Image (cartoon, rainbow, N blue to C red):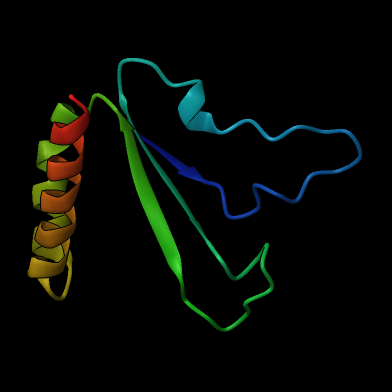
Length: 91
């Protein structure tokens, strides 16, 4: 698994282009995470997100690990069930 912190994805210099790591990863799971506080100047707010891409069937053990370490395991189970439903619609 590759973890990609892209909190500064829109802060580039001159003519530089940001390339998301998930677009370069093959044959593995990539967890990309970002948030509002840096780019959108929402300092103090803890609003963020993460996105799994790649071979998601390999992420099953990660899902279990996240579900058992979060304060409220039902939250992550609900998120993953929605992702599974969404992916099923586009399969």
